[in-house]
Length: 472
Image (tube, rainbow, N blue to C red; front, side, top):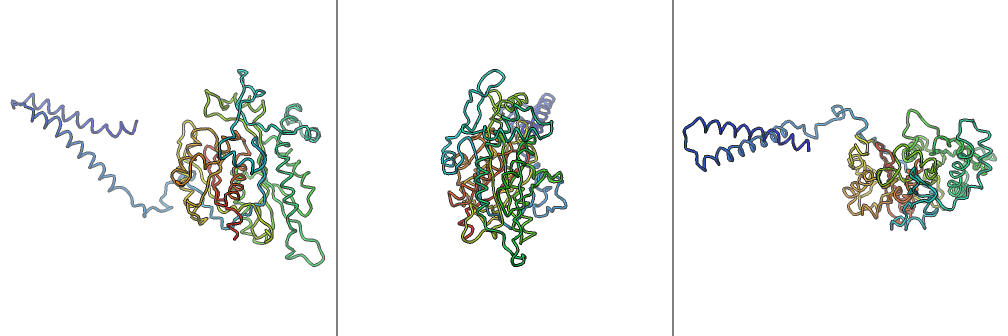
Protein backbone atom coordinates (compact mmCIF):
# COMPACT_ATOMS: atom_id res chain seq x y z
CA UNK A 1 0.00 0.00 0.00
CA UNK A 2 2.84 2.43 0.81
CA UNK A 3 4.46 1.74 -2.57
CA UNK A 4 1.16 2.43 -4.37
CA UNK A 5 0.63 5.69 -2.49
CA UNK A 6 4.21 6.77 -3.18
CA UNK A 7 3.80 5.99 -6.89
CA UNK A 8 0.58 8.02 -7.19
CA UNK A 9 1.61 10.96 -5.00
CA UNK A 10 3.29 12.99 -7.76
CA UNK A 11 0.46 12.43 -10.33
CA UNK A 12 -2.10 13.56 -7.73
CA UNK A 13 -0.05 16.70 -7.05
CA UNK A 14 0.28 17.43 -10.79
CA UNK A 15 -3.45 17.08 -11.39
CA UNK A 16 -4.24 19.21 -8.32
CA UNK A 17 -1.88 22.00 -9.40
CA UNK A 18 -3.24 21.98 -12.96
CA UNK A 19 -6.84 22.16 -11.73
CA UNK A 20 -5.98 24.96 -9.29
CA UNK A 21 -4.19 26.94 -11.99
CA UNK A 22 -7.10 26.41 -14.39
CA UNK A 23 -9.65 27.73 -11.87
CA UNK A 24 -7.53 30.82 -11.17
CA UNK A 25 -6.98 31.40 -14.91
CA UNK A 26 -10.69 31.12 -15.77
CA UNK A 27 -11.63 33.44 -12.89
CA UNK A 28 -9.15 36.10 -13.99
CA UNK A 29 -9.90 35.92 -17.70
CA UNK A 30 -13.07 37.01 -19.46
CA UNK A 31 -13.00 34.06 -21.85
CA UNK A 32 -16.19 32.15 -22.55
CA UNK A 33 -16.21 28.78 -20.67
CA UNK A 34 -17.88 25.93 -22.56
CA UNK A 35 -17.72 22.12 -22.53
CA UNK A 36 -14.67 21.95 -24.79
CA UNK A 37 -12.72 24.31 -22.52
CA UNK A 38 -13.59 22.28 -19.45
CA UNK A 39 -12.49 19.03 -21.15
CA UNK A 40 -9.24 20.63 -22.30
CA UNK A 41 -8.24 22.10 -18.94
CA UNK A 42 -9.67 19.52 -16.52
CA UNK A 43 -9.15 16.25 -18.49
CA UNK A 44 -6.81 16.44 -21.48
CA UNK A 45 -4.08 18.66 -20.02
CA UNK A 46 -3.88 16.73 -16.64
CA UNK A 47 -3.89 13.39 -18.52
CA UNK A 48 -1.08 14.54 -20.79
CA UNK A 49 0.96 15.79 -17.81
CA UNK A 50 0.57 12.50 -15.90
CA UNK A 51 1.47 10.50 -19.02
CA UNK A 52 4.60 12.59 -19.59
CA UNK A 53 5.60 12.15 -15.93
CA UNK A 54 5.33 8.35 -16.07
CA UNK A 55 7.16 8.25 -19.41
CA UNK A 56 9.96 10.41 -18.07
CA UNK A 57 10.25 8.33 -14.90
CA UNK A 58 10.45 5.10 -16.90
CA UNK A 59 13.06 6.54 -19.28
CA UNK A 60 15.18 7.83 -16.40
CA UNK A 61 15.09 4.43 -14.64
CA UNK A 62 16.06 2.61 -17.85
CA UNK A 63 18.90 5.01 -18.65
CA UNK A 64 20.39 4.90 -15.13
CA UNK A 65 20.18 1.10 -14.72
CA UNK A 66 23.57 -0.69 -14.97
CA UNK A 67 23.73 -3.53 -17.47
CA UNK A 68 23.61 -6.96 -15.79
CA UNK A 69 26.76 -8.05 -17.61
CA UNK A 70 28.77 -5.26 -16.02
CA UNK A 71 28.10 -6.44 -12.47
CA UNK A 72 31.09 -8.00 -10.76
CA UNK A 73 31.73 -9.55 -7.34
CA UNK A 74 33.90 -6.55 -6.48
CA UNK A 75 30.97 -4.12 -6.91
CA UNK A 76 28.24 -6.34 -5.48
CA UNK A 77 26.59 -5.10 -2.27
CA UNK A 78 28.06 -6.56 0.88
CA UNK A 79 25.26 -8.87 2.04
CA UNK A 80 26.87 -12.18 2.92
CA UNK A 81 23.73 -13.66 4.44
CA UNK A 82 21.86 -13.16 1.19
CA UNK A 83 24.41 -14.95 -0.93
CA UNK A 84 24.23 -18.73 -1.35
CA UNK A 85 27.44 -20.50 -0.52
CA UNK A 86 29.22 -22.11 -3.44
CA UNK A 87 29.44 -25.79 -2.59
CA UNK A 88 30.51 -27.66 -5.75
CA UNK A 89 31.40 -30.90 -3.98
CA UNK A 90 32.46 -33.23 -6.82
CA UNK A 91 32.59 -36.41 -4.77
CA UNK A 92 29.19 -38.00 -4.05
CA UNK A 93 28.44 -40.16 -1.04
CA UNK A 94 27.02 -43.66 -0.98
CA UNK A 95 24.23 -43.97 1.57
CA UNK A 96 24.65 -47.38 3.17
CA UNK A 97 21.65 -47.21 5.48
CA UNK A 98 18.85 -44.78 6.31
CA UNK A 99 17.02 -45.94 9.44
CA UNK A 100 14.27 -44.15 11.34
CA UNK A 101 11.63 -44.40 14.04
CA UNK A 102 8.50 -42.25 13.79
CA UNK A 103 4.96 -42.16 15.22
CA UNK A 104 3.80 -43.47 11.82
CA UNK A 105 6.09 -46.49 11.76
CA UNK A 106 9.70 -47.59 11.41
CA UNK A 107 9.75 -49.07 7.90
CA UNK A 108 9.83 -47.24 4.56
CA UNK A 109 7.49 -49.75 2.91
CA UNK A 110 4.86 -48.88 5.50
CA UNK A 111 5.41 -45.15 5.93
CA UNK A 112 6.05 -43.82 2.40
CA UNK A 113 2.65 -44.79 0.87
CA UNK A 114 0.80 -43.27 3.83
CA UNK A 115 2.91 -40.12 3.63
CA UNK A 116 2.06 -39.66 -0.05
CA UNK A 117 -1.65 -40.19 0.59
CA UNK A 118 -1.67 -37.75 3.50
CA UNK A 119 -2.92 -40.34 6.00
CA UNK A 120 -0.38 -39.54 8.72
CA UNK A 121 -1.31 -36.55 10.86
CA UNK A 122 -0.85 -35.60 14.54
CA UNK A 123 -3.86 -36.29 16.74
CA UNK A 124 -5.24 -35.01 20.04
CA UNK A 125 -3.53 -36.73 22.96
CA UNK A 126 -5.71 -37.22 26.04
CA UNK A 127 -2.70 -37.47 28.36
CA UNK A 128 -1.02 -34.29 27.05
CA UNK A 129 -2.87 -31.17 28.26
CA UNK A 130 -2.42 -27.44 27.91
CA UNK A 131 -2.84 -24.88 30.70
CA UNK A 132 -6.62 -24.93 30.23
CA UNK A 133 -6.75 -28.68 30.70
CA UNK A 134 -7.53 -29.39 27.04
CA UNK A 135 -5.86 -32.14 24.97
CA UNK A 136 -2.94 -31.01 22.84
CA UNK A 137 -2.46 -32.04 19.22
CA UNK A 138 0.78 -34.01 18.99
CA UNK A 139 2.42 -36.95 17.22
CA UNK A 140 3.57 -39.59 19.71
CA UNK A 141 5.05 -43.04 19.14
CA UNK A 142 2.53 -45.43 20.66
CA UNK A 143 4.64 -48.60 20.91
CA UNK A 144 7.83 -47.50 22.65
CA UNK A 145 9.23 -49.76 25.37
CA UNK A 146 10.91 -47.26 27.69
CA UNK A 147 11.20 -49.62 30.67
CA UNK A 148 13.96 -51.57 28.97
CA UNK A 149 16.22 -48.48 29.09
CA UNK A 150 15.39 -47.10 32.52
CA UNK A 151 17.91 -49.18 34.48
CA UNK A 152 20.80 -48.16 32.21
CA UNK A 153 19.70 -44.52 32.33
CA UNK A 154 19.40 -44.48 36.11
CA UNK A 155 22.97 -45.75 36.40
CA UNK A 156 24.20 -43.12 33.98
CA UNK A 157 22.33 -40.33 35.80
CA UNK A 158 23.78 -41.51 39.09
CA UNK A 159 27.29 -41.10 37.71
CA UNK A 160 26.55 -37.85 35.84
CA UNK A 161 26.97 -34.34 37.18
CA UNK A 162 24.20 -32.88 39.37
CA UNK A 163 23.38 -30.31 36.69
CA UNK A 164 21.02 -32.72 34.96
CA UNK A 165 17.23 -32.53 35.41
CA UNK A 166 15.46 -34.10 38.38
CA UNK A 167 15.72 -37.85 38.48
CA UNK A 168 12.04 -38.63 37.97
CA UNK A 169 11.59 -36.39 34.92
CA UNK A 170 15.01 -37.31 33.53
CA UNK A 171 14.39 -41.03 33.62
CA UNK A 172 11.08 -40.68 31.78
CA UNK A 173 12.34 -38.24 29.11
CA UNK A 174 15.76 -39.78 28.57
CA UNK A 175 14.38 -43.32 28.39
CA UNK A 176 12.02 -42.15 25.65
CA UNK A 177 14.94 -40.86 23.58
CA UNK A 178 16.80 -44.14 24.02
CA UNK A 179 13.70 -46.11 23.04
CA UNK A 180 13.22 -44.00 19.91
CA UNK A 181 16.82 -44.60 18.94
CA UNK A 182 16.89 -48.31 19.75
CA UNK A 183 15.44 -49.74 16.52
CA UNK A 184 17.36 -47.52 14.06
CA UNK A 185 20.60 -48.09 16.00
CA UNK A 186 20.23 -51.88 16.04
CA UNK A 187 19.60 -51.99 12.29
CA UNK A 188 22.51 -49.62 11.62
CA UNK A 189 24.85 -51.83 13.64
CA UNK A 190 23.82 -54.77 11.45
CA UNK A 191 24.77 -52.74 8.37
CA UNK A 192 28.15 -51.80 9.82
CA UNK A 193 28.83 -55.41 10.79
CA UNK A 194 28.20 -56.52 7.21
CA UNK A 195 30.76 -54.08 5.78
CA UNK A 196 33.93 -55.70 4.43
CA UNK A 197 37.21 -55.00 6.25
CA UNK A 198 39.27 -52.00 5.09
CA UNK A 199 41.48 -52.50 2.06
CA UNK A 200 45.04 -53.43 3.20
CA UNK A 201 46.78 -50.94 0.90
CA UNK A 202 49.76 -50.15 3.12
CA UNK A 203 49.41 -52.94 5.65
CA UNK A 204 52.38 -55.36 5.83
CA UNK A 205 51.59 -58.98 5.12
CA UNK A 206 50.45 -60.95 8.11
CA UNK A 207 49.34 -57.94 10.16
CA UNK A 208 45.69 -57.09 10.75
CA UNK A 209 44.29 -54.17 8.76
CA UNK A 210 43.92 -50.80 10.39
CA UNK A 211 40.46 -50.15 11.84
CA UNK A 212 37.97 -48.30 9.68
CA UNK A 213 37.31 -44.75 10.98
CA UNK A 214 33.68 -44.24 12.05
CA UNK A 215 32.84 -40.56 12.47
CA UNK A 216 29.63 -39.85 14.40
CA UNK A 217 27.67 -36.60 14.44
CA UNK A 218 24.89 -36.44 17.01
CA UNK A 219 21.89 -34.12 16.70
CA UNK A 220 19.93 -34.09 19.97
CA UNK A 221 18.80 -31.76 22.78
CA UNK A 222 21.79 -30.26 24.57
CA UNK A 223 21.02 -31.76 28.03
CA UNK A 224 21.06 -35.26 26.54
CA UNK A 225 24.08 -35.03 24.26
CA UNK A 226 26.47 -36.66 26.74
CA UNK A 227 24.01 -39.39 27.69
CA UNK A 228 23.28 -40.35 24.08
CA UNK A 229 26.99 -40.26 23.19
CA UNK A 230 27.75 -42.62 26.09
CA UNK A 231 24.96 -44.94 24.96
CA UNK A 232 26.27 -44.95 21.38
CA UNK A 233 29.80 -45.72 22.53
CA UNK A 234 28.57 -48.64 24.61
CA UNK A 235 26.51 -50.09 21.78
CA UNK A 236 29.30 -49.63 19.25
CA UNK A 237 31.68 -51.70 21.36
CA UNK A 238 29.76 -54.65 19.92
CA UNK A 239 31.54 -53.94 16.63
CA UNK A 240 35.11 -54.81 15.74
CA UNK A 241 37.34 -53.18 13.17
CA UNK A 242 36.16 -49.59 13.76
CA UNK A 243 37.90 -46.58 15.27
CA UNK A 244 35.10 -44.44 16.72
CA UNK A 245 35.20 -40.66 16.92
CA UNK A 246 32.58 -37.98 17.53
CA UNK A 247 32.33 -34.73 15.55
CA UNK A 248 32.17 -32.03 18.20
CA UNK A 249 30.52 -28.63 18.00
CA UNK A 250 32.70 -26.19 16.05
CA UNK A 251 32.26 -22.59 17.18
CA UNK A 252 33.73 -21.41 13.87
CA UNK A 253 31.14 -23.39 11.89
CA UNK A 254 27.92 -23.38 13.93
CA UNK A 255 25.86 -24.54 10.94
CA UNK A 256 27.42 -28.00 11.30
CA UNK A 257 25.80 -28.28 14.71
CA UNK A 258 22.25 -28.56 13.37
CA UNK A 259 22.34 -29.30 9.64
CA UNK A 260 23.14 -32.88 8.53
CA UNK A 261 23.31 -31.87 4.85
CA UNK A 262 26.23 -29.55 5.59
CA UNK A 263 27.93 -32.16 7.76
CA UNK A 264 27.68 -34.68 4.92
CA UNK A 265 29.15 -32.09 2.56
CA UNK A 266 32.06 -31.42 4.90
CA UNK A 267 32.69 -35.17 5.14
CA UNK A 268 32.63 -35.48 1.33
CA UNK A 269 35.15 -32.63 1.08
CA UNK A 270 37.47 -34.44 3.50
CA UNK A 271 37.18 -37.56 1.34
CA UNK A 272 38.15 -35.50 -1.70
CA UNK A 273 41.24 -34.24 0.11
CA UNK A 274 42.09 -37.80 1.24
CA UNK A 275 41.12 -40.11 -1.65
CA UNK A 276 42.39 -43.19 0.15
CA UNK A 277 40.26 -42.60 3.24
CA UNK A 278 38.00 -45.50 4.19
CA UNK A 279 36.04 -43.55 6.78
CA UNK A 280 32.33 -44.02 7.34
CA UNK A 281 30.01 -41.22 8.44
CA UNK A 282 27.24 -41.92 10.94
CA UNK A 283 24.63 -39.18 11.40
CA UNK A 284 22.41 -39.73 14.45
CA UNK A 285 19.39 -37.58 15.36
CA UNK A 286 16.86 -37.99 18.13
CA UNK A 287 14.36 -35.66 19.79
CA UNK A 288 10.97 -35.70 21.46
CA UNK A 289 8.71 -32.74 22.15
CA UNK A 290 5.81 -35.05 23.00
CA UNK A 291 6.16 -34.90 26.76
CA UNK A 292 4.36 -32.68 29.23
CA UNK A 293 7.45 -30.69 30.23
CA UNK A 294 8.27 -29.71 26.64
CA UNK A 295 4.62 -28.90 25.93
CA UNK A 296 4.43 -26.65 29.00
CA UNK A 297 7.62 -24.91 27.89
CA UNK A 298 6.30 -24.31 24.36
CA UNK A 299 3.04 -22.94 25.74
CA UNK A 300 4.83 -20.62 28.15
CA UNK A 301 6.89 -19.27 25.24
CA UNK A 302 3.77 -18.77 23.11
CA UNK A 303 5.01 -21.32 20.55
CA UNK A 304 2.49 -24.15 21.05
CA UNK A 305 0.07 -24.79 18.19
CA UNK A 306 -3.55 -23.99 19.01
CA UNK A 307 -6.57 -22.34 17.44
CA UNK A 308 -5.23 -18.98 18.60
CA UNK A 309 -1.63 -19.76 17.59
CA UNK A 310 -1.81 -21.30 14.10
CA UNK A 311 1.91 -20.63 13.56
CA UNK A 312 2.84 -22.54 16.71
CA UNK A 313 4.57 -25.92 16.83
CA UNK A 314 2.81 -29.29 16.95
CA UNK A 315 4.88 -31.50 19.31
CA UNK A 316 6.30 -34.62 17.70
CA UNK A 317 9.12 -37.10 18.12
CA UNK A 318 11.40 -39.15 15.89
CA UNK A 319 14.84 -40.66 15.56
CA UNK A 320 16.95 -41.20 12.44
CA UNK A 321 20.36 -42.61 11.52
CA UNK A 322 22.17 -42.30 8.19
CA UNK A 323 25.37 -44.16 7.24
CA UNK A 324 27.46 -42.83 4.35
CA UNK A 325 30.83 -43.57 2.79
CA UNK A 326 32.79 -42.95 -0.40
CA UNK A 327 31.28 -44.89 -3.35
CA UNK A 328 34.71 -46.43 -3.99
CA UNK A 329 34.46 -48.21 -0.63
CA UNK A 330 31.32 -50.13 -1.67
CA UNK A 331 32.22 -53.59 -3.02
CA UNK A 332 30.93 -54.46 -6.48
CA UNK A 333 28.75 -57.23 -5.08
CA UNK A 334 27.11 -54.89 -2.54
CA UNK A 335 24.40 -52.31 -3.07
CA UNK A 336 23.99 -49.03 -1.28
CA UNK A 337 20.58 -47.52 -0.65
CA UNK A 338 21.04 -44.27 -2.56
CA UNK A 339 23.62 -41.74 -3.67
CA UNK A 340 23.92 -38.27 -2.16
CA UNK A 341 24.92 -36.39 -5.28
CA UNK A 342 25.13 -32.65 -4.64
CA UNK A 343 24.14 -30.08 -2.06
CA UNK A 344 23.90 -26.32 -1.66
CA UNK A 345 22.90 -23.90 1.03
CA UNK A 346 22.53 -20.25 1.95
CA UNK A 347 20.75 -17.80 4.21
CA UNK A 348 17.66 -15.73 3.55
CA UNK A 349 17.76 -11.95 3.68
CA UNK A 350 14.85 -11.95 6.14
CA UNK A 351 13.58 -14.70 8.43
CA UNK A 352 10.41 -16.60 7.68
CA UNK A 353 8.02 -15.59 10.45
CA UNK A 354 4.97 -13.45 10.99
CA UNK A 355 7.03 -10.28 10.37
CA UNK A 356 9.26 -11.66 7.63
CA UNK A 357 8.93 -12.49 3.96
CA UNK A 358 7.28 -15.62 2.66
CA UNK A 359 9.12 -16.29 -0.59
CA UNK A 360 11.38 -18.85 -2.21
CA UNK A 361 13.87 -16.36 -3.64
CA UNK A 362 16.93 -17.98 -2.04
CA UNK A 363 15.83 -21.55 -2.80
CA UNK A 364 15.00 -20.44 -6.32
CA UNK A 365 18.61 -19.33 -6.80
CA UNK A 366 20.09 -22.43 -5.20
CA UNK A 367 18.05 -25.09 -7.00
CA UNK A 368 18.89 -24.42 -10.70
CA UNK A 369 22.63 -24.34 -9.97
CA UNK A 370 22.29 -27.47 -7.84
CA UNK A 371 20.53 -29.39 -10.61
CA UNK A 372 23.07 -28.16 -13.16
CA UNK A 373 26.00 -29.42 -11.08
CA UNK A 374 24.22 -32.75 -10.60
CA UNK A 375 23.55 -33.04 -14.34
CA UNK A 376 19.79 -33.23 -13.80
CA UNK A 377 16.82 -31.64 -15.52
CA UNK A 378 13.93 -30.46 -13.37
CA UNK A 379 11.71 -33.08 -15.01
CA UNK A 380 13.93 -35.86 -13.61
CA UNK A 381 13.12 -34.95 -10.00
CA UNK A 382 10.17 -36.91 -8.61
CA UNK A 383 9.62 -35.17 -5.28
CA UNK A 384 10.75 -33.06 -2.36
CA UNK A 385 11.34 -34.34 1.18
CA UNK A 386 11.57 -31.67 3.87
CA UNK A 387 11.09 -31.03 7.57
CA UNK A 388 8.40 -28.48 6.71
CA UNK A 389 5.38 -28.45 9.03
CA UNK A 390 1.88 -26.93 9.08
CA UNK A 391 3.04 -23.32 9.45
CA UNK A 392 1.82 -21.37 6.44
CA UNK A 393 5.01 -19.38 5.78
CA UNK A 394 7.24 -22.45 5.61
CA UNK A 395 4.77 -24.49 3.59
CA UNK A 396 4.21 -21.61 1.14
CA UNK A 397 7.96 -21.26 0.59
CA UNK A 398 8.27 -24.94 -0.36
CA UNK A 399 5.14 -24.82 -2.55
CA UNK A 400 6.41 -21.71 -4.35
CA UNK A 401 9.75 -23.39 -5.06
CA UNK A 402 8.05 -26.45 -6.53
CA UNK A 403 5.50 -24.50 -8.58
CA UNK A 404 8.17 -22.24 -10.07
CA UNK A 405 11.11 -24.57 -10.63
CA UNK A 406 9.55 -28.05 -10.60
CA UNK A 407 6.32 -27.42 -12.53
CA UNK A 408 5.69 -31.09 -13.27
CA UNK A 409 5.34 -31.87 -9.56
CA UNK A 410 2.31 -31.31 -7.34
CA UNK A 411 3.28 -29.02 -4.42
CA UNK A 412 1.13 -31.12 -2.08
CA UNK A 413 1.16 -34.77 -3.12
CA UNK A 414 4.81 -34.74 -4.31
CA UNK A 415 6.05 -32.99 -1.18
CA UNK A 416 6.85 -35.21 1.79
CA UNK A 417 6.21 -32.54 4.41
CA UNK A 418 7.34 -34.55 7.41
CA UNK A 419 6.49 -31.89 9.97
CA UNK A 420 2.84 -32.00 8.90
CA UNK A 421 2.81 -35.79 9.36
CA UNK A 422 4.98 -36.31 12.45
CA UNK A 423 4.79 -32.91 14.13
CA UNK A 424 7.79 -30.76 14.95
CA UNK A 425 10.59 -33.23 15.65
CA UNK A 426 13.19 -30.72 16.80
CA UNK A 427 16.79 -31.81 16.21
CA UNK A 428 15.65 -34.92 14.33
CA UNK A 429 13.71 -33.08 11.61
CA UNK A 430 16.44 -32.29 9.02
CA UNK A 431 18.03 -35.74 9.19
CA UNK A 432 14.63 -37.41 8.98
CA UNK A 433 13.99 -35.48 5.73
CA UNK A 434 17.32 -36.71 4.33
CA UNK A 435 16.56 -40.30 5.34
CA UNK A 436 13.10 -40.24 3.75
CA UNK A 437 14.56 -38.76 0.56
CA UNK A 438 16.99 -41.70 0.32
CA UNK A 439 14.16 -44.22 0.65
CA UNK A 440 12.03 -42.32 -1.87
CA UNK A 441 14.87 -42.27 -4.40
CA UNK A 442 15.24 -46.02 -4.06
CA UNK A 443 11.50 -46.72 -4.21
CA UNK A 444 10.85 -44.47 -7.22
CA UNK A 445 14.16 -45.08 -9.03
CA UNK A 446 14.36 -41.34 -9.66
CA UNK A 447 16.11 -38.33 -8.22
CA UNK A 448 14.69 -36.68 -5.09
CA UNK A 449 15.38 -33.37 -3.37
CA UNK A 450 15.92 -33.12 0.37
CA UNK A 451 15.49 -29.74 2.07
CA UNK A 452 16.28 -28.50 5.58
CA UNK A 453 13.83 -25.66 6.28
CA UNK A 454 13.75 -25.88 10.08
CA UNK A 455 15.49 -22.55 10.64
CA UNK A 456 13.85 -19.15 9.99
CA UNK A 457 16.93 -18.05 8.00
CA UNK A 458 19.19 -20.97 7.01
CA UNK A 459 18.29 -23.18 4.01
CA UNK A 460 19.90 -26.36 2.63
CA UNK A 461 19.15 -28.51 -0.42
CA UNK A 462 20.54 -31.86 -1.52
CA UNK A 463 20.02 -34.12 -4.55
CA UNK A 464 19.74 -37.86 -3.97
CA UNK A 465 19.69 -40.52 -6.66
CA UNK A 466 18.93 -44.22 -6.48
CA UNK A 467 22.14 -46.20 -6.22
CA UNK A 468 21.25 -48.57 -9.05
CA UNK A 469 20.81 -45.74 -11.57
CA UNK A 470 23.76 -43.55 -10.66
CA UNK A 471 26.21 -46.41 -10.22
CA UNK A 472 25.39 -48.06 -13.55
